[in-house]
Length: 580
Image 1: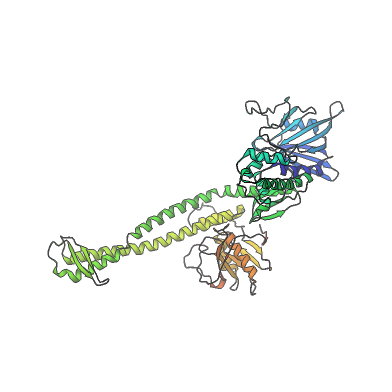
Image 2: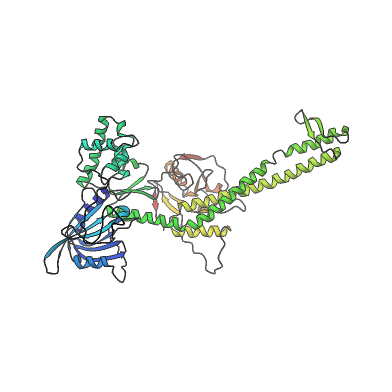
């Protein structure tokens, strides 16, 4: 979720409770667009991180310190001069803007008490940190915005500070029912879009939530709704905003399996398919969400080279498979040539020299058939020509059948590698995948005496009934789990006919409860290419019936089972044991 006005309201409430009355003891500028304030409060020392990055503007309380440059930037030095020991006397959010103002009291050079304002604007690419005097004039800012850069507002020393109102949005905390309905009608289009474009601080996700709470289809327009429906929509809008007005926030992150998909300061009922994890503070939510997203982004970036290797090999093998399939199709009529040869040997004794065809009864089908002949050859030579053609296509068919199976196995294997890259969570997982690609010849091994150190471990879960469940992250782990870790009576699960992880349930010799079978099935579905599908077919069998084919690639197995279940890939509620 973007840093919308509701998130800012939750942050403002948290900062007021934690920092108001505190004294600034340290100001650092770790990055060109970032400040780190250390504030001493009666409850102890707190750190506030403020980032005005165009790509990721953030503000949150943190326990972490950051390394500052040897020479402090000019903006940092200016703040130290004016408010280096100032006391924070007020923190507030103007209306529902994505802005937080810090009113700071300090002593000037003459020892007189003065007040300055530090304005934090969290507006995407327009984000900024602006320092103003008590008359609302800009002393300086972390980013200078000239008239050449923006025709709406200059942010330069000496200019008057104001909040630009380019969208002419209404304040959702004070809007009346009449104005609410009028605004939606004037905007037109889907009501969800009309809501977030008409009111300050409302994001598209929140607009969807309000429509959901009102039991209205968000794609409907205001013109589609009756007067009573519009009144009902305003009522739900007011109920939602009342939580903001009262400060009744419940910060949470919404997970799709283990991947954080959204965060919010208020509940999002329409995210019922996601697992909701409520945290103690909005700062903790922001830190956790963005660190998780950053980790996932970093893993995707680091896996780009491996994905390129896999994708290139996949495309090459798919083209090869298509070519081989077309060539195999050309051999489908090979048996016809064998029959032609036999019929010529049977009926060709009466052929006149120079005959161009032979019409005879096909004793296999009891139908008359006309066979083309080479007029320059005898009947026996024509028969041998058809037998030779048959034998050539037969050899081609046999060779292609084997090659196609090998190509199909390569495609299946590469798709399993692709799935392993999709579920990788840490750099250690990528190391093992790279080692696997090296072992199978897709990556050339660099000549080095240093052995590759593998620290990645399978996912480890505990079922609701207390049974340990292990999930391989890649083919090497799948092989290790199935053929070295699992015992004969443990249960093995795998998504049917699609690339996916091997899932092992340690039975301990017990008869597993149905709930454990279902949870293991969900894990097999989630860690497969069918993740996200409502219905995934899962095969399961005791491990002792799973065999390794001779010469098979890592992770390849053969088994025969009549046990299967159809289940979704929702693994919320299954407890994971964190190992790395």
